[in-house]
Image 1 (spheres, chains in turn red, cyan):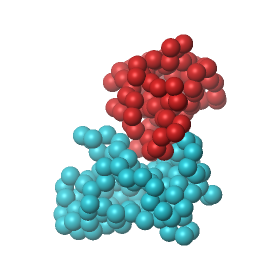
Image 2 (tube, each protein chain N blue to C red):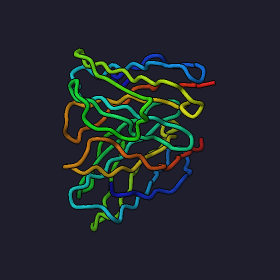
Image 3 (cartoon, rainbow over the protein chains, first blue to last red):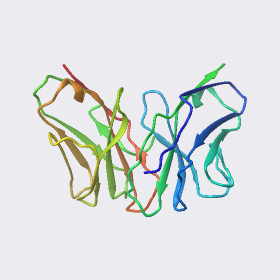
Image 4 (tube, one colour):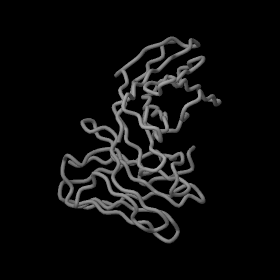
Length: 111
Length: 113
């Protein structure tokens, strides 16, 4: 499975935008970029995914670099409830369905 | 609420014992996945079942086994428990075999003393 690299931790303030980076320099053409997050004492939950174009949903936006070697998860107005570990995961369309989690980025939101 | 339920929420047992963790997938989901989360190893995939059949295996120990029943609920059996088996065990489900979103349950926290 292609690997991703994320900062161990990030900190932001409530109601400010947050940009969570992910590097995936060995990404293949059939790899989708998925983001999951794990709130304290909960199971992981899906956030967003994309292939080449930027994507938006009610939770976040995903900005994908033109060469696809990096991506950024954007939380437009962080709330205290967004404090979680965020995982950037590559999923091959033709590959196994399992999720391969890295260490993720622990996001702290200051009030 | 993801729609995936897991029981029990907490389990405390002794080394050498055997326990069974239960998972009910979201209504209509055919695939069930088991993951283990420990402090040193992070979140790791154990095993996947699809419509009653084993589909994929990850880093699952031989002391561990799982099955998926006709009603699609799944059980993870852990035997000859060791201290190092203490972890959070998550079940997830998805619709089928495509690269769909996985929905996770709240987990079972296992403590082996």
